[in-house]
Image (cartoon, rainbow, N blue to C red; front, top):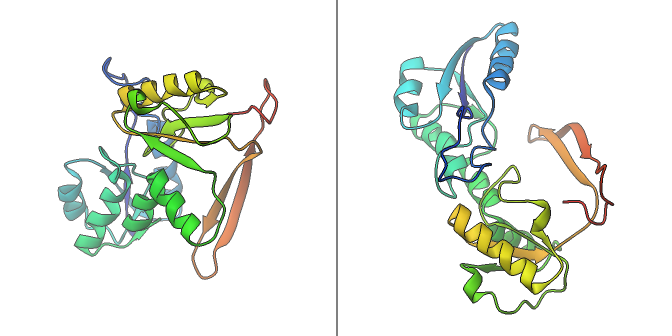
Length: 223
């Protein structure tokens, strides 16, 4: 089968006006090459499809039977949905989540409200457009401060875990100025950080699990 491989690669340098982790979500050239090689070893004809403005023309030229999508997209809170939305418009099947799922899960406040509406507990939170409007917080400390629509821990530092109003305000200022979006402040929840890989839908199958274990701080303070 002809398989399209949709992806974003990290640039060699980050422009000075952007945060140092601006392209943290993007993959390395080595990662893309490994995936391409794995698909080729299975007998597929792999065509690379860099995500971005030229993606539509590239898909139409390649005419893949399916697209293996690891692209993060470019710009805005719906960026992860760009590639699957284009593929749906062109009638090309793809691997991974659909546009709605990707839009909802990247926007943390939207995801939390939907989860809460279905009866699942989620830490209380507030969003702030600037540090100037951050003068009180009806949430007990410690809290964690993060951008509302980023992934791969973009905008999250050790200092993101705040134990006072002043510390939280400084992180709100950092997030809103550096990432040009609202900052979400929510109750900090200590515990294990676990990633679970899932394959399929009917039924879904757990492919593997990975836990990140802190080495220099206690689990209660680990960010």
